[in-house]
Length: 333
Ligand code: 3EB
Image (cartoon, rainbow, N blue to C red; front, side, top):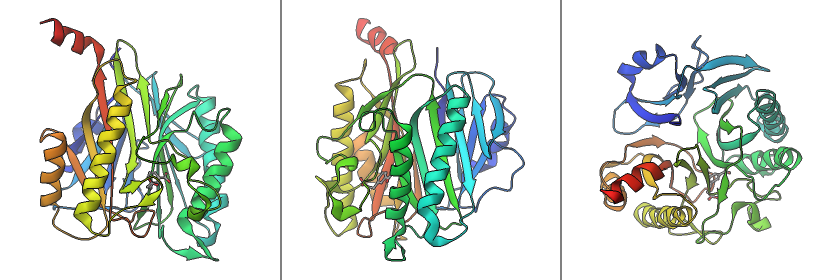
């Protein structure tokens, strides 16, 4: 069966997808949290670079079932479940308990709907590097997430979802997630210490995520959900300037793809990249550099964002896909 797809589209053409019964989620950027009545629509307060207005479209394989449970908007096509939770922050120093409860709610809802295996989670909240009561908000977030995942996951270090944790212009904690009925395969990066093994200098509770998750959807079709990837080698941040950080990030992505390819049924190809960048610079040279590494055909979305370590300037996440059926056809002909 063909799995769901995700792609970028000009915001001016979003209407056609909102009319499509298969739509699982449509994410707008640059706007504060959504007041849309359509529960499939989310909005992340991150400005897009380059003047375009792009939306991210998640399209199921067949008409979606949608609903709201415990404040969590959800849509499924029978194979995958997309979840969205937007929460007010009742106090800036309460991010840890807020995150822990939000994760418990996500797991309870996904499980109740029959999709207990989380593949990928996006975490968006404002002032990610701000200290509150002596604790950086990213670390408070990590502590809350860790608390919830230790309680929810039977195998903590082998079933962690892929993730991104990004600082927005806020307000509020936003969690978007993909969940499945059957588990997937966790992939770690040989160039990097697993985030869940980072030493204590990065926080009392380690960031609980995997570098990527490889999911087989049947008939040889696979998705690789790639976590936010930055200029980190081992556990240390590398380079002060943007371009060396970009090159290190690209090397990390290449190593991660190679590692995933050792486990994949057919070669994985990048299908989509999302690039979070801190400074307000012209993205043209980065686009060229990324295109050099991965080809000009990969759609890219550039968003201005805060990254979870103060010294990091860029972070790249994405999706790679593979098809064993297509591959065997290609190599046979
Ligand atoms: C890193 O590799 C960079 O806490 O969910 C990347 C992706 C990062 C996800 C998260 C953090 C997270 O540690 C930061």
